[in-house]
Amino acid sequence: MGGTRCPTLVLALTLLTLVAACSDDTATPSAPASGSPPVSSTATSTSDASAAEPTPAPPAPAADDPGVPDDEWTRRSADDAGLSEEGLASLDEFNTEIGSHCFVIVKDGELVVERYWNDTDPDTDTPLFSTTKSVASVLVGIAADLGLLLLDQPASDFITEWQGTDSEAVTIRHLLRNTSGRRYDFLQDFDELVRAPDQSAFAIGLGQTAPPDTVWFYSNSAIQTLETVLERASGDDVADFADEHLFGPLGMTATLTRDGAGNVTLYSGIEAGCLDMARFMLMVQRRGEWGDRRIVSPEFVSEAIAPATDLNNAYGLLFWRNADPPWDHTDPRRDRSTRFWPQAPLDAYMASGAGDQVS
Image (cartoon, rainbow, N blue to C red; front, side):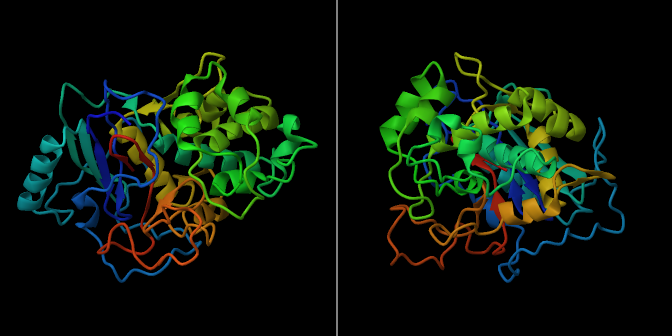
């Protein structure tokens, strides 16, 4: 993580979703958050703590739901959206103080608030670091929907380098849950991986620490191996796959960066703006629907944003949830009843990255 906090926030009021898109010249572009996603006080301002756990069914559109945005968003006034001028002024002050680059609020598919600072505008794409992981999750879900892979399929069916090793039984679902048991340490993930000319090869070459589903590690290296899974399963470049099946259909201008060997850095490589991530999270909120088009199955989305493992109640399939994660990863005595946002719904979820990128 860099030393400058420069978040950009997008809030979807119907979901309690914040998106942060910030450029930090002091940060290493490939370095994602190391555990707890940064949470601002704005995350609790529009929610009801009595909300129930998530359900598979898509939320019912509002009666005046405009559908999905095309090149231009349908706009709604803050007053019509039930937002106070005092509250928005407080948010502006907060975002100015912490060095935000943009802040967006979307309600029922309509753009309510759009703010920019520090010489950015709607066309500015900046590194969003580990929010990339949630995008990677959806890409894997799309590949599963297309019949290119199964979540419970051994990743070694595609990462043939693992065949005959202790990692042969690691499934794609294990990688999405961060319960693969692949070797992890902080220096490896935040220095060695980032500096490796071929990050996918580096990640694949690491050994196994524990059997799958016995430990939870926030492992960038393990997640990077999904780049190889997607490429070999689809027979396509991962960035091209994302453009065809996700970014293009949603109208996103986002791009995915590459390492020195040309591999997409799938754990931390997206560059996008607030409005791009608002589109992405609006699609997630609607359980994979985008107008009359299905981007990813509702079953996958519902699983991705729900608790994926008892080892960490705050994590789904590369999405963070509104619970307090076990930072020591393995202590079974830890109280899992607390939450990131005590006043927020239990089913709140987010994509998060270094520098206070929150979606």
